[in-house]
Structure formats: structure tokens, C-alpha cells
Image (tube, rainbow, N blue to C red; front, side, top):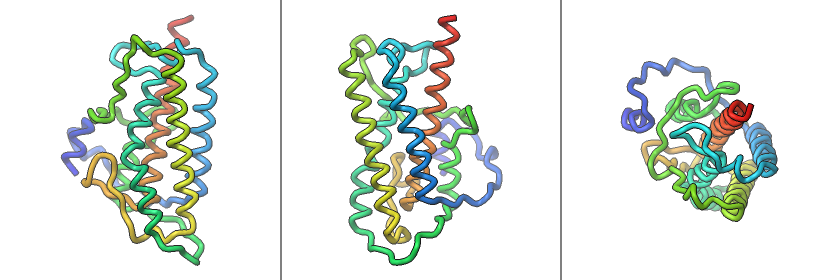
Length: 214
């Protein structure tokens, strides 16, 4: 646990107070994912310069944020497919899933608070978007958008498929490694909060661009 917190740039666990229980439902997760996907659809209307320009030194462009999200989903895709294929069908109506304390803490570290990111974290090296900023043309931008929608349509499909499955038996390893293992509803929530966190980041970039053009 402490190793993971250090990786993310936290020096102490004292910032974590006892939090309320977290119950997860596929309906809520699908609704929030649709909002994110619609937001990214609207980003496609921006010109290439707005998508690729870096407004503030040592920050990412909008397209780099999306590339990071594509990379971050990579470790989950095959694991989700494999886990769902091994799950037995459930005849009972799926009840809200209660996230476990350690997993809930990891999830809440990602969740934004309104229009701001609660804690700034370091990006693990393997999840950094290593794009060539000097050669970021329209073709490359469109490729990153296509990959984003393909991957996150897969996430939506996985949430939908899990609704009729027994989700209480199989865990998957998080993208940061075996220090965090998720049941499927926990993994979906982590991925969603990570998406929502970076949508806030994209709003921050757009606001910075507005200030610079005034």
C-alpha cells in the first residue's frame, strides 16, 4: 500500500479519513460513461491546433490526455474479456456491489470533486503518452480518437455483459500491478473515475487556452 502511494507522489496516508461505504451499480456506471463519451465526441469538433497545443509548460495537450487514457485501459481489456468468459450466469437480480476499503481508497484517489482534481498525482512512466509533438497531424489525432472510442465502447460492453454474471468470484489485476486487485464492479469504477478525472483536466486545458487567446 505505501509503495503505491509513494509512486503516486503521496508522502503520507494521513490524508485518508474514514469514508462512507461505496455501492456500485452498472446503471450508474453506464450513465456516467455515456457522459464521458459524449464529451469526447464534442472534442472532435476542435481544430487540430487546439487539440495538440500545450498551453502551459510541463503539461499535456488534449490529445495527449486521450492517448494516456488509451494506454491506461490497455492492461484491462484482455483481463475483462477473460474474466467475463469464465463467470457463471446469475439468475438473481444484481444488487449494488459494495467496494472493499482498500479498493475504495484507490478509487477515491481518482475521483474528481466537482470541477477539480482532488489530488495531483504523478503518472507512472509506462502510462505516459510518448507522442511526437512536432509531427502531430490530423491523421494521428484521428487515430487516437478512433482508438479511444474502440477501447471505451469495449468498457461499456463489459459493464453490460457483467450485469447477468456472478461477479463475486473472479478478480483482475489493476494496471498498477498486483498490489491492487479488483472485482469487476471495482475495476469499472476505477476506470470511470480515472476518465472523469481526465475530463476535468481537459476542461482545465480548454480554460487555459481561452485565457491565452483573450
